Image 1: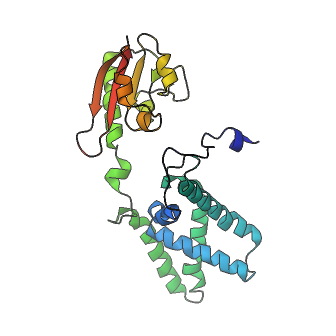
Image 2 (image 1 turned 120 degrees about the vertical axis):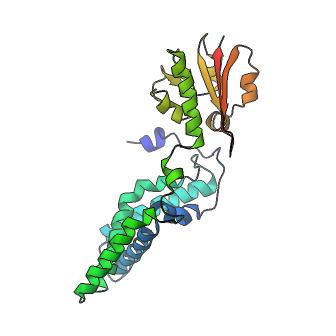
Image 3 (image 1 turned 30 degrees about the vertical axis):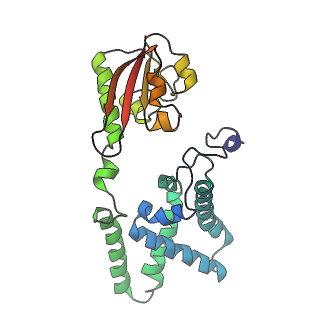
Length: 263
């Protein structure tokens, strides 16, 4: 019952990722849900609040919608601002409250499309069609808050380099488990269960020291270096490890994968 306090992996009053402005998540919300839903959301938020003040909505509705969303937003804003709970300021966490956002946005939609034009049937139909059309079309528009097709839906440079690593091992045939790596996407391309320690282990000094002859280590400069706090120079200095490959991006921010085998 107390798993949030006893099992959560982020329960730490520090973060390797630093901190940022407290307004970060509020400012970036529009890029998560898009312009039309953003407008409908805040319209619905204000509608519920005003109805509650005028005693036209109940406390349960306010608690379920406004309080749950606000608590989530404020919590993550504080985590990032204070640099705690290993917060990285990733706006994708807002997807967790997307159902609540959708209900609040629907309230805004009903207010704009129904309440404002109660006695005007034709106007209601036009407004509903216009709003729905804009919601459907918006993701395909050239807007910073719309879907950025190459960046959002295609493999990034790190994932492409991870595929090169996987192709190397697949070309070698069978390899010895467990493989030591930290980059998340390697689990996908190597088809390994990241929670099965007989198949893979994290890049830590303890796991490197415990490597047996034939064991594989894949170091990367994003997760292994940043999160594991292990630099490439430390790995290169170990005489018992033989470097078997190095892959790196040729453009943009450098992504490096280096593979090693225990002699």
